[in-house]
Image 1 (tube, rainbow, N blue to C red):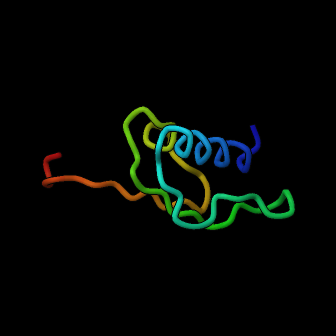
Image 2 (cartoon, rainbow, N blue to C red):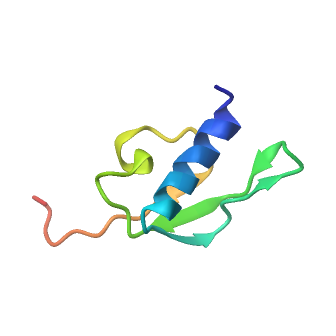
Length: 67
C-alpha cells in the first residue's frame, strides 16, 4: 500500500472513531499529506496501534507516568 494512502486511512479511521483533527489531515494534489495534529485518540484506532509513517503528531492524554 502506498504510504500516503496508509497514513490517510489511519487519520480517517481515527476521525471516524471520535478523534479530533486540529489541523491538516488532507491530501494535497494527490502527492502530499498536510502536517496533521490528532488528539482524543483511543486504543481501538489504527493511529494508536500502528506506526505512522507521515507528518502526523498524535497527542495522548494520561493521568500519570505509569498510565
